[in-house]
Length: 146
Image 1 (cartoon, rainbow, N blue to C red):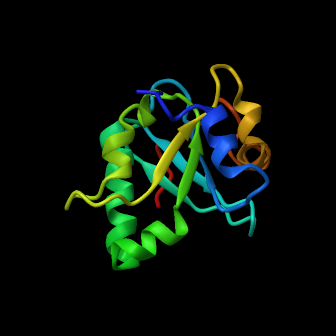
Image 2 (image 1 turned 45 degrees about the horizontal axis):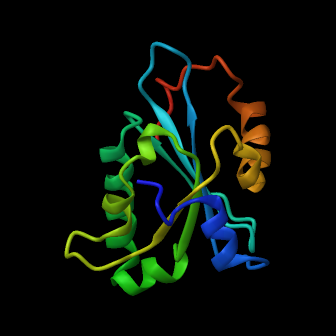
């Protein structure tokens, strides 16, 4: 799964460029299945987030499909989400499903940080620190809505 998708591969192809998006999830306290799928665009410091009712590869794929539909053509999604850097969380464990649109066209490229190195996507980690001021660790997301 990680062949040609490692952080080294990412740095080789995107060194000193800001044309990528960092992706992660913020999990609710135990007992709740909800989580928040977050994106961080380093170039513009844009931080969109999407509430998920479950933190699974299928729900992440559904968000990608929804975003692609709302943005219109595959090309628009591709321009915004050209390259994504994320961690090795189980919810991101099916890169092919995220990279390919339902019609089989490529819509993004996914790379993974090294194990136990979330600091490699430091922009989104910093924004998560600010988000945790509003939703502290241990908070249950059951009352949140999109």
